[in-house]
Length: 347
Ligand SMILES: [Fe+2]
Image (cartoon, rainbow, N blue to C red):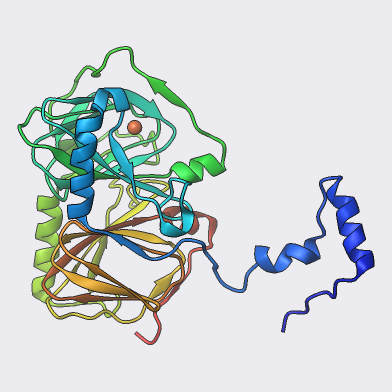
């Protein structure tokens, strides 16, 4: 049992005296700093895509992508309001690019992932290569990579942005630059990086120059096919169903150094075993419907809905139909510093 020091008037007077000198007695705050297990202000929460879409279309009438620089509605964790955080370490927002709009070129210290929700055929250009965006594609904008987005189609395009903004903010390491041109020059043919790095081959003299994967679009079509083939074998993990990790083909490590990205499938009627881990995770229900129990909270979800699970809270997923769930978290950072932990219960 933890021993809490008894407070006396003499001690209180001492605390007040040292407070004026910017000092605090550790024994008065240690219990809140070094907790027996993770104790987060982040809470379980879910956002329906239909509600996000409606609000975004309203935003589409209020401000242009050019004026906003990025027309995004931030998904704020209800336990962390006003901080632009979906978890303690991560940011998430939904971005809208209307037909024939451009979100102008810039680059920054924060790494970004895009997970395409709705619309087909808008583009993002990253470091001189353009890729068309299709639902379910996972697209990377690495640290300090020039990027602009545009939509030459006739329908609005929505995607989820996941960034390590709170982490970079915590480290006080943020820089941003804007290009004089609205759109960066495209110097490579479409599909170049996938051909070079995404076919179980690497250019013979490839030298690793970044901790981020050189593949910047992981198309859903390929991911879906892999999951489907594995589902046929029927080897489901009790806690995860079939869960795959996006990887950097050069190192085998996570595709991004600060954010781990995953795709999993659950067959109809599957209920996962109780599981918890120290990386709070943001999920997108790419396909299917069901619910996720996070401790005593139940989050219902359907296609394109987004939900968040805090660190170390027991999770059980229930699939009403065949489901495909995308997720991301700060797991690579936790693994790198050796603090990542999981608990598979009795699975
Ligand atoms: Fe950006």
